[in-house]
Structure formats: C-alpha cells, structure tokens
Image 1 (cartoon, rainbow over the protein chains, first blue to last red):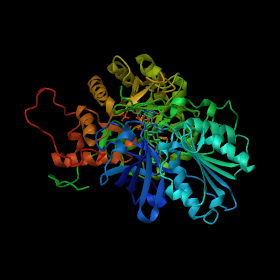
Image 2 (image 1 turned 45 degrees about the horizontal axis):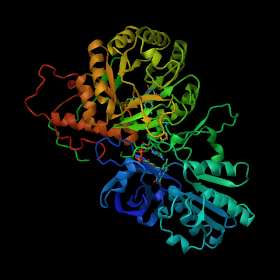
Image 3 (image 1 turned 90 degrees about the vertical axis):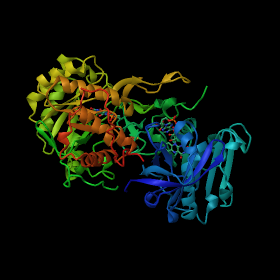
Image 4 (image 1 turned 30 degrees about the horizontal axis):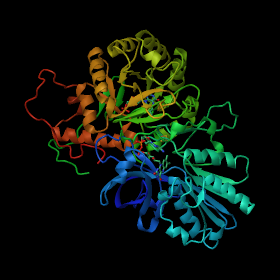
Length: 290
Length: 333
Ligand SMILES: Cc1cc2nc3c(=O)[nH]c(=O)nc-3n(C[C@H](O)[C@H](O)[C@H](O)COP(=O)(O)OP(=O)(O)OC[C@H]3O[C@@H](n4cnc5c(N)ncnc54)[C@H](O)[C@@H]3O)c2cc1C
Ligand SMILES: Cc1cc2nc3c(=O)[nH]c(=O)nc-3n(C[C@H](O)[C@H](O)[C@H](O)COP(=O)(O)O)c2cc1C
Ligand code: FES
C-alpha cells in the first residue's frame, strides 16, 4: 500500500473534552487507502527544528468520500500542545497511512467487544464505524463498547454512538459517571453477567490498561487485537526505535523485539513480553511548567 | 517546485569523485536512518541519490537494546538502538537484490565485536555484486563491546582498518566518532592503515533524564545524539579532519536542508550524508539534492566541485551580504 506525504489542510480544530481536541484534516491522497487502526505521522512544528520529530496519531474517523480524516489529540506534551492550537485553514505535513490496521470482523454472528481507555477511543471509533456499516449493520446488539476515563469531563461526545443501538458501558476511575473503576473491571463484570465470552475483542488504552487486559486475555481463546504505543522517530520501519519486547517462538530466553510502526500498531497483546515493558516507555513527562 | 532561471544554461555537474568511489551527486543517506533503503522507496527514487548507506550490519543478527530506545531533545534525537540488524546473510539474500533493482548505489556499513569480525564481514561482502563501498563503523556509542572502543583509540582504529583492508578491494570509508579528544589523530591513523575515505561524524554521546520519575529516558542510560543540535560539532569535526588528511571526507551531522549540506561542502567535505532529517521528512535527501542544484544554478557554478572546500578563512567579517534566495530554503515548509 503506498504511503504518501501530504500537506493536509486543517478544516476544523475544536476542544472535544478535557485536554482533548478533535482535528478534521483534508488529505485526499492519504485517505483512500487508509484503514481503521492505521496511523499517520504529523509534523507539529511548521518551521524550525523544535520539536524535531513528527508525532504518531491514529485515524479516529475516516470519511473516504470526502477525502477527510479526523484525529483525536490528547495534550500530553509540547507537540500535542502545539497541535491543539493549530488553526483551521493552515497546512499540516502528514505521512501515511502507516502500520497495520485492525483485522476486520467477518461475521455478524460474532459478539465483538471494543475496550477503550481514555484517548484509546481514538482508533476504536474508526473500527466501530466500519463494523456498524458492514458486518454488524443489522446486529448492533452484538457490539459492546466499554469506554473508561479518569473523570467524567474526559469523555468525548457519544451522541452518535448512542443512536446506533450498541451496548455502551461507561466507567470512570473516580465514579463521576457510569460504573466506578477501571474499564477492564467493567469488561470482566460484563463477562460474568453475560456468562459468555465475546468472540472478538479490540482494545486501546493506557499502559496500565494494556497490562491488565493482556493478563486477562492470557490463556483465553478469543481473538484479541490491541493498538499499542511506543516512542517513534520515523514511523516507517527505518529507525528501529519503536521496539517492544516480544515473545520469540524459540522460548523466553531469546531476546526479541517487535516494531510498533511496522508489525503494529495493532497487535495481539499475547505477543508482547509485558514483564519487560518499562513504564517510562510511552509517556515521558515533558510538558510541565514549574 | 519552480525552477529558478539558469544563468549558465546547462545543468550543473553534480558528480563528485571520492578517490576510488565515483558518485553521481554528493547526497547520500546515513546509516541507520534510511533502513535498508526500501523503507523509503514510496517517497524517494533511490536511483537519484548519490548513494545510500544501509543500516550497520554484523555477522550475526542482533536484537538491539531494550526500549525505550529514543528520546527527543531540543532540536535533536537521542537514540540507543543498539545496532539491531538482520545480519549480513539475510541482508545479502533478502534486501540486496531488491535494492539493486531500484538502481541505488549501495554502501554497506559494517560493525564487529572483534577486529576479526570486521575483516570477515569485509571478505563476505566483497564477493557480492552490487556493493560500491564499505563504511567501517568504529564509532557507535551504543554497544558495550566493539563499537566506539575501536573508534576512540588511534591504534585500535588502525588495526580494524588494516584488517579490513587486507580482505577487500572495495573502497573503504571509515566513520569517525566525535567522542574523542583529537579527531585528527584518529583520522591520520586510519588513513595510514588504508582507509580511502573518511566520514564524520557518528552520533555524539549524550544523556536525557526525567526529573519526575528520576529515571534516564533511555533504558541504556546513555545514547547518541543526532539532528540539528549536533551540526556545529559536526562541522568542526569535518573542518579538523579535512585539515589533517588529504583523502576525501564525507560530512554528516544535523543536515536538514540544502544550505546545511552546502556548509559541509564549503568546509571541505566532498559529499554529505543525510541522517535524522529522513525521519522528519522522508523526502529530505532529494529535497537537499534539488536545493544544491538550484544553488549551483543561482551562483552560476558549472560544477559542484568548484564550490567544495572554498571556505575563505582570511577575512572573518564579510562586508557584503552574500545570502542567496533558494526559494525553498527549508525542506519542511
Ligand atoms: C501508533 C500510535 C498512535 C497514536 N495515536 C494517538 C491518538 O490517536 N491520539 C493521541 O492523543 N495520541 C496518540 N498517540 C500518542 C501520541 O503520539 C503522543 O501522545 C505524542 O507523540 C506526544 O507528543 P508530545 O510532543 O505532546 O509529547 P512529548 O512528551 O513532548 O514527546 C516527546 C517525544 O516522545 C514521543 N512520545 C511521547 N509520548 C508518546 C507516545 N505515547 N507514543 C509515541 N511517542 C510518544 C514523541 O513522539 C516525541 O518524540 C499515538 C501513539 C502511537 C505510537
Ligand atoms: C536511529 C539511528 C540509528 C543509527 N544507526 C547507525 C548505524 O547502524 N551505523 C552507523 O554508522 N551510524 C548510525 N547512526 C548514525 C548516523 O548515521 C549519523 O552518523 C548521525 O545520526 C548523525 O547524522 P544526523 O545528525 O544527520 O542524523 C544512527 C543514527 C540514528 C539516529
Ligand atoms: S518508528 Fe522508526 S522504526 Fe518504528
């Protein structure tokens, strides 16, 4: 699939929730081949060399007929801060589509769980949109979205989802809306209540969520895919910086890494050596003023 | 991209001759920043570049260092990849044939844990068609054994080069480390030992820490700094190396634009390698090449060789402003 660099035009940028911005970009060369779960590298500095590197973001929604895609950006550092302030009308250098997307469901018979922690909703929405217009068009009741955030203000707008007829299970860490506790606890509770397992589970979220979900799916016979993160410089498979410790076929003694930009970002969490993943790997704190 | 008027009609001659190595133009890509070349083929016509230097190869595949392997710093990138690579065999079988098809001039960057490993790699690669030169990496700061140890001691550096020289007739480029007291001493030693060309610099040994978690940002603790932040260091290293030896020198370090590349050529580099800029802008190398060509036209230069090494150090305070409108001074508009 061709990857292109395109000067995308920002059509909209608005605050979507606490610390989260929604950007609509016109990128007619990138959009046609883009798939849910894939990502783009976005250069946030329009000139100069600081910040130097482009930042990776998942496709949040794809509007193929209009040549548009949406990004959902959570402000965590200088790059995302700059991006959140970018103005409609201005151009943005974008490279994509990159990486492997989600494996799409094939049958409406399958019960599908979507598990989003915080900004993890970003790539899952694109997949939900796809599933609800194709395989599960007539069976939205077989689709569950578990969506957990720290506190109520961090939820993005759910109006369009509420109308689809899927099961929506909201949770907050502080109990301000929906179930109290983590989104993984909400999933475990539902499985108990339903006394059945989903056939498929797609997830994206913070490192603690990934670790706890990875532990939960271990040894269970369900199809699981998770969109994972790692620090990236190129997004193209060239720098080899985005490595994650992974299981090797020859056993745990063999040192082995997967590269999130090429082997992923969508991966079966059972392939990752979570015991070797360091907490600093995905979120250095750089945007704090004292 | 609007072409500027050509004062001298015909296209400038961008060919450069680096001793035994002839290049169609002076723009190469730096090892470890362009993968095995194929990663960039959606963006760059590889045959247009002066050449590509592939990711450093060792005899056996290497898994690399544990993550985090990257950290961004002001105008720079800190990495501790740990020379992850597929190993020489897989390179020859899987990567090289595809690269050859793309018409790229291929330079292979090699690295070993011992002098003998370097020599063995050289012998193995010499028998393979389609390789234009070897670049000996004696300057990687990110591995425990070998790597920079060879590059910081003139005697050991010379030993590596001499051992490689015995096993190959390919043009030899030795890549120097900035992490030394005297780069000139190392340069002289490796040229005496048989290196045809020098390239400088590799990354600058550096560190980044997180004040909140109180941890280093790289699992390896130390890493190699690259990108615009190191350009002044790289220029100085090229300048000192050019003064010290008479063989051709390739400039590397923080080159993002055609103007950056021209600074290295001015100081005496016969060619340049573009590194971290490839990550920021996949087409950076070609934009730099186009910019150099525009520069030559605007300046009325018939050949880029007329420009190389013409730095005038006699007058420190130029009277006239000689700035030139390159219409695309930055590759990242
Ligand atoms: C495949 C993928 C998809 C992503 N999709 C989204 C998304 O849809 N929405 C969203 O808000 N965020 C997403 N992220 C995370 C986002 O890339 C980071 O939050 C962002 O890069 C932080 O940049 P910063 O300058 O604000 O932070 P800083 O901390 O200042 O960044 C410093 C450096 O660290 C890197 N970095 C920091 N955090 C991350 C991270 N989590 N992942 C990768 N690199 C990081 C940056 O690239 C930069 O080089 C995604 C990450 C990956 C790997
Ligand atoms: C991620 C990364 C990997 C690198 N790997 C190698 C390598 O395998 N061999 C080598 O000789 N240099 C390697 N280098 C060094 C570059 O080739 C180059 O010398 C350095 O980055 C400075 O140039 P720049 O500032 O243009 O990037 C690597 C650099 C980076 C950033
Ligand atoms: S980000 Fe460069 S290899 Fe994955």
